[in-house]
Amino acid sequence: MTPSRTKFRSMSVALATALLAACASTGGLQPAAEPHPIDDHVVTRSLSGAPLSPAEFPAQDWWRSLGDPQLDALIAEALQGSPTLAAADARVRKAQAQAGLADAERKPTIGASGQYVVAQLPSGLAGDEIGGQLMHNAVLMLDFKWPLDVWGGKRADYMAALGQAHAGEIEAQAARLTLAANVARSYVALAQAFDGLDVANREAARSESLLGLSRQRVKAGIDSQLSVRNAEVSIATAKAQAEVAQQQIDSLRNTIAALLGASPDRGLAIERPRLLQAPAPGLPSVLPSELLGHRPDVVAARWRVEAAAQGIKSAKAKFKPSIDLSALVGLAATGFSGLFDNDALLGFGGPAISLPIFEGGRLRQNLASHDADYDLAVAGYDQTVVDGLHQVVDAVQAIRALDAQAASLEQARAAAASAYDLAGKRYHAGLANQLDVLAVQKPLLQIEQQLVGVHAQRYAAAIDLDQALGGGLQPTTPQSSDSIGSTSSTSPATTP
Image (cartoon, rainbow, N blue to C red):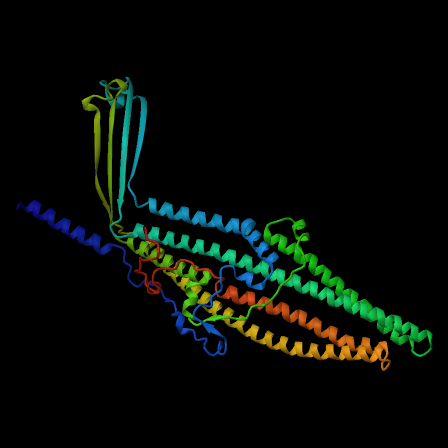
């Protein structure tokens, strides 16, 4: 080997060593968070005494348990025509298109082009042979490119976009669940307003009777104007309560129409609710772990963690050499007449390798950003799990308390109704006057007013529990929860 060749080889090795030493490094960069195992959240004592069953997740049409066909029809209408759901579906299509774009980046491309060029070069630049002459050139080309995904970075980009698309699909399901729950809650409030209007009207009728008796007694000289004024106050108060209830009815009809995506006049056609029963609470015995597979917000949060993990893989792949294959094949000639001659063929191609060396910290900052995205996704997932479990416990505890309140109020109403019935019998027997009957009726109406509120809250708590348990949905989850904490995972449920 000649000295010059030895020297050149030594310089090449030194240069290669220097280039490799100068390559950007991922050292010291990694996510700071890991998802908490869901079974670490203990709810045994909070849910003690609640009825458990292996199959107590709600049905998809959970609202049918309320027993009102009009409510069933309203929710079906809302799920068909709400602009909120149309927007959610559009977001899903956009996310799917983004995943398709990421997938297309991994695949080879072929493009064709044709060009006809007229050119004239100055003789001082091109010489007398071609200078100063008008040249006609025709070119037909095929361009082939294929970015080889040696390190899996482009596949990770695709998997990240696919994870975001899955999250979007599940969030669209969550939007449907939320819409159905909001329609049901508004419907329950509408039922409460109608019941409240009945009680207010009965109180107004009672007060009107009391006023008439008071005026008769004043006229007979056996009572003062004080009883008349008290009766007038009761009438005005009852009428105000009736007006409030009617305003609530009008407002809630309008609210339901808006949830349906319909005009306010649609609300005027909604008849008085006929809710039959508030379902007893039923809890699955597999809480809390199975909550992962039923609550759409928890599942969507898992997909976002998975997508963020794939984003880290993509960012790490950018630190490594990239290899691309490219080729250009075509025909070129002076004018169209020689375009298909044997000597018109041209082409070149081959592999190209590029290696990041000095990037001004761009690659490291990009990786740090993806690490932070992962930590944010993990925090969002953990918080969603916590919120979901608290919503389940809150609903169960509310149902317990409201059932106890309703039982006590039912006992009180039974006693008040018995007293009212007894007072009526005494009046008809001539042992009491009508004032006694009206006085005994007042606590009965007050108890019934309280029962109206408790029953409405009990319906709402049943709706809250159904929603907290996922509303009967079974969204597609990542294949294994073990992949959530690992940035090396590439196994979501749907693969390319």
